Image: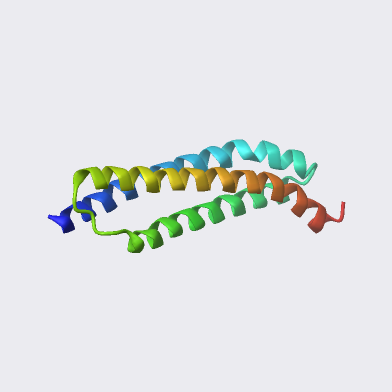
Length: 118
């Protein structure tokens, strides 16, 4: 029974986090271009490139973390433990997404100053 609960947990966690990561990433990509264009005034190509770079990096970091973190899960022996672990790990992903978003909001203007000498 333990193996089945772990497989169920991996499936549910993978589905939830994939949906969150792809949905939030796409929303940031579509709406974030306005912020990046404001930072990189009159440099549309550079702004588009930075926006794509942020999206690809965002996907790689988050989906990579999800895949690696599965190997550190404990054996799940009860349904309440399954729900607890899913809630804890999903909350950690959402917190990580928020931190990444705010770090990008800080990083983009700093990178613009560094790379464009303005």
